[in-house]
Length: 254
Image (cartoon, rainbow, N blue to C red):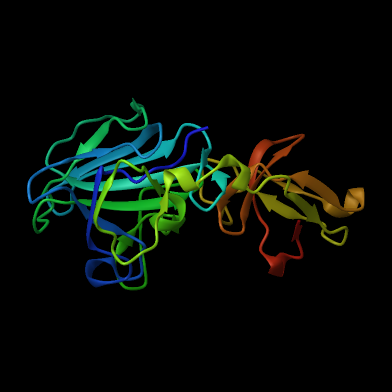
């Protein structure tokens, strides 16, 4: 199983979370060794899910991990990522880039100031490109903090860590992963929406409903997490689906 890794051999973070043009996001602006153009490497073996190029925002890629990966915080899950400002379009939808191979490069497309790569990380499968948050900033769905999910190979150089704590690759072991979690749906629930893994889990996107009360409650093994409070489970009739299990719903995760 791959460990999810920081995508540049030299870490030089020039803008971090929730500041400036990143207001309300966990986005990072990454520069490499100097002011030139360095490669940005695939943080995990991934498939290109969407590409976009326009004068206003520049060149962008959205990718999804091909398999679940081991994260710095011990979770095992699929991850998605968004990269921006490359001066060239290098990939098309469906391309697979192996972990550690060049995925894009720093650049200035989209009127970016100085060569850099805009990077955002999301937990779970790809559910869409971006949305506009309450600050008017476009951001990736299901965003998480990269420093909590990506480790840094021992060979990488850290010039500027952005003020965040990062785990070294040697500190992340598969033994630390969360496993054996189960989902318990209460017997009082008569209808529980479930969603396909390739769509955002919101009303209108459901692929079916479960009826825990019919069976005196239902229990499932949790196969992963699409985002906080959205679990992945395998069902008899619908296959693998997403399900919203926030504590307020009455669901129990143990």
